[in-house]
Structures are given as structure tokens and as C-alpha cells.
Length: 140
Image (cartoon, rainbow, N blue to C red; front, side, top):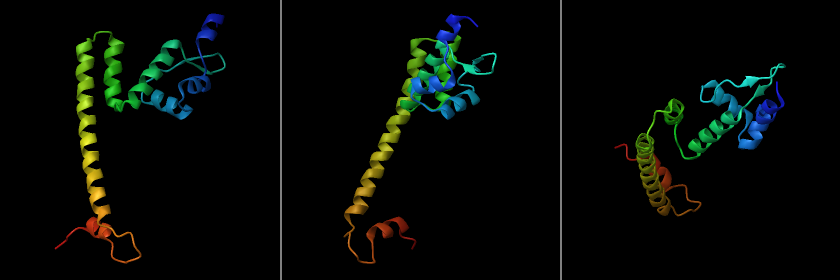
């Protein structure tokens, strides 16, 4: 192994430290084939190239933005093929944005519901609780 190769490659522990994720996360992404099988030293240590490091950052940032594993797989497939347009990436991102917007709408509805049932509660030592009643619902 040349000095350049060793300098440009890092072991898994260093990759985890640099990326801010844990070793298990890296193993997981390798296991589901988002990260390729890394090169190995003669003694079997995994060595991650600059490209592997960039790919991991791409995956981690995509996860931070709420992209699913399948969405990330699609993005990476387009990027890996090199045959993508900005419009195609934009379309996938817009689909994701639509899902995020719906989740926000659902969470706001959930928040309103929880505020409403909480406001009916006297927060006292009484055994009757409107929150429990709201959760049980009217079965009749």
C-alpha cells in the first residue's frame, strides 16, 4: 500500500469520528448497500476512501433532511449513474417536500387535539380526568 493511499483513506473509527455518526450506523449503511464494501488493509482493516467519506456525508445529510432510505437509494442511484438532471433531483425533492408538509399538517392537528383535551383537565387530585375520557372515547 502506498503512502498516498494510506493518507487518503481512513479506518472505520476515524470515519465515524469525522462524520459524527457511530460505528453501527456505518455498518448498517454498508449492510443495506448504501455504502460500498470498503477496501481493506492486508490485516483486514477497512479503509474508506475520500469518495466513501463524501458518500457517507451525503447519506447523513439526506437523513437529517428526512429522506427515507429508499429515497436516498434513488438519489444515490441517479448520482452514481451520472445520468441525471437537476430537474429529476428537483422532482424527487419536491415529492419529499410534499410528504414533509403533510407530516407537519398532521403534527399540527395532533398538537391542537392535545391542547384541547389538556385544556379541559383541571389538573387536580380528582379521580375523573377529561383526558382519560377523551382517550377512551364514546363507545356508546
